[in-house]
Length: 413
Image 1 (cartoon, rainbow, N blue to C red):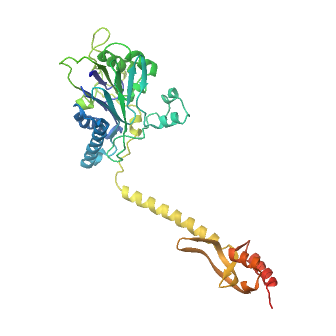
Image 2: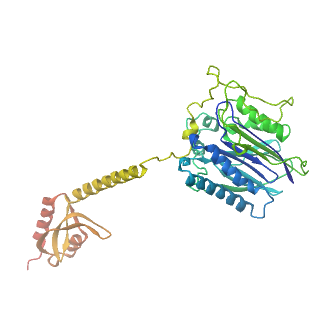
């Protein structure tokens, strides 16, 4: 079987930069959504896609091994970028990869970009988001619908950042003629409902569906970049002019949008066959200015912040504080233990101990305080065994009273 595919990425109505990247070819479909705001999420996503696109050739039998290896290489490449330029520390990207071998898809996934399968009129989500809100959904604390407006909906828990080296989810999906695969960034799936996506995917060619999914996402109010890849599984080979498609940041799209002009439309067609263009959103802004992001949730989405100067000093101070707290706790515990007393045996005699009747490896928590002249050999077997096991006391006076009681019962003959 073969893939007939289309890929579109649009910067959207609000953002100045497209931090999404995508690639569609005869063997490979992938979307990467860069995160990190000012620390170049566009560079992370484009770097990952450039590494992943090397998968676009007929795979061998170990399809998941190839996917995993490519994801790890993309992560390593991001690590190299950060090492070369520490200012990039904090950049990261999601990655959703589908490698096709003619009969099945090998899927790799990390982050909150998604892959769907549309088969027989039904849409099924293949991937599982690595996000905070998804964990709340899994625990039954919120619904899928509530997650779309949750204040922390942008927080993802796993991504490719060259630091944590997270393992991707890996699984296979058998392919059937007529299947339609949809891979997108959260600019689409975070806005469109499941039913709306299914409605669009049930119509037209891959090119038409991709256009409609992007347009519907923006019309529904998406404030993010939107990237959509749609591919049909067919027993017919595609036309020879269907070349691989590289979209988004990986295709080196313009980073800024001058006001007063339309956003460059990426659509290759619409219902009437025209080229789609999205009007600029701001109205009362000085001419020649650039579109500015609002308070940008991307800045707090996943990537750790650059620790900046004196990070080693902050870590040292934190360690000192923790050691100080631990010392105070230990000192308080030791002081309390030295106010405790119990009665036990020491060298065959009834003895008052100070501390608690316990031991830690290499450390005794008590010591003999008063050794009496009451000998265990002169006590009854029951009394002697009780002393050997240790007898608790409320305080020193109570311990002495216990000793006096045993002294009165000892055999003096």
